[in-house]
Image 1: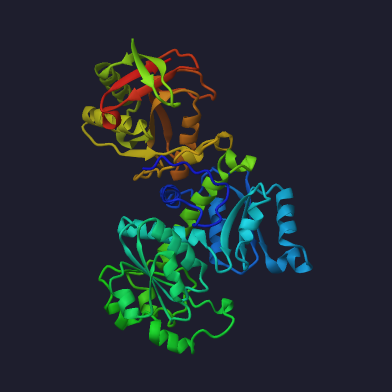
Image 2 (image 1 turned 90 degrees about the horizontal axis):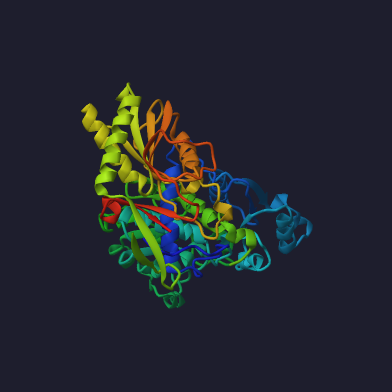
Length: 316
Length: 190
């Protein structure tokens, strides 16, 4: 479709990518999705390469997804979590990363509570650095898998009304999604309590509303975000019960959405808070398909960033 | 002999192209290959065709139709994209565009006729055989190639060949097919 070739050694964020590069990556992900449907779900594209999952912040689904993606590309995988690493002994992130590179790691997938940690590593590492979530900044593979899922279900992204509902302020998923969806021509609406969805987000090129009815009425896609308890320094709203009553997607509100509105959630879901159990499990929910697509998208990311000679020479 | 202009590097350079097969010759070659496939597969029930993208796919479809019309039955056709199975990814400056493979039938127990347009080093065929094995265990795999231009780097030989063409390593053999390029033709460029 596009003649674009991928020239990045790292995937640090969506902000750095062009619309063509995003489309190129999504096309590649479609090819990798097919691998998961074969009898032998494995291709030799990254045979002999080593990927390190450096997760300084807890995660199950993203870490597992990256690990499985690497294994399906025949790469070797090492997992490092904070508690099991020398970081607790006082080693700096830079030293940890350089030690991993000294072991000839080709790809370092990093999740860190500090925004910019992957960008910092990419400046001195020859290995490919993949951002698996940095603070409240970016979570590029989540945005890519969301876009892949939307494109697969709706056929296109441009022109769609996408509502992102919930904790926008503390959400890296929201930022990456906003950048990606606006680059591909979707109309993005952000909604939630005014403390978590400040007006300043209008500068990202999206619409901000604190009226949930208005936010969901014309939405083709509703992406629900979890309340990030772990990132909130003080109480941003009176309570979980009140949040559920004011902004949760319950049956009554669901009935007022467009009949083909698609329900997404990056997980982990808090049933009964941002979404009612029945809606999470209904036919218009694509929550589990997002997980399946995440694997294909991460295979594409690893393949494009580390598959060619670009990564071996450390050039960008 | 024709002279065409190639604009690949931003400047014009003369490339001479010789037609090796025209549409009629290509058609005759495929018909002969179809008869050879029938001859070598007495239990035709397990036959299936798999084309290697891009130009192997329409060739596989045509061969399946020709064999089908001889035996009065239909044969399944699959498509293979071998780019994920290449062994030279780490040596390349840019990555190939990967696409999905589509094999909608169970390959286990089948006699697969693998179809490509030009047989050269044999590395594509090696990758294709690896990939087919990921879908199941065929009873046998046979190889059909419209052109065999030599210069093999692996111990691979075709079972059905449209035309053997001695070439030098620097020459390019291009197969044009109506389905993709608008006309049927095989040309060699020097």
